[in-house]
Image 1 (cartoon, rainbow, N blue to C red):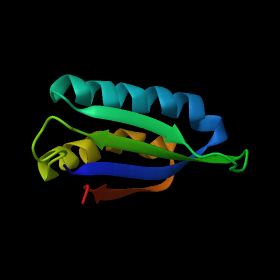
Image 2: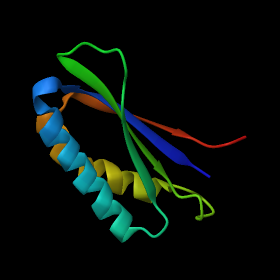
Image 3: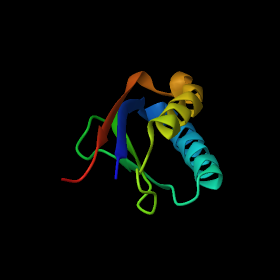
Image 4: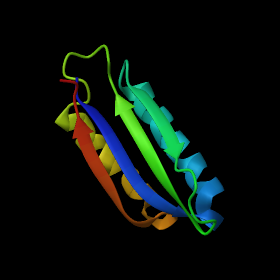
Length: 97
């Protein structure tokens, strides 16, 4: 089952707005894709001025997990986050052994 992990930096003064937008984005994706599970995490011990965030996407009940087509949809939907984050989003896909 393929899972996605997406990490990026958010300026502290954008955190509330960015969190609301990421949560809205993830809710929309869950509504469109049965069984999609999402999480939003933030790093500990980072500078007050910027935070590292991680979005996690998985579909445990779908044989292939997060497909490449769904990945492309997630990436396209996340374009609206560009004004709220610092630098690029880094995406990595993983699967269990």
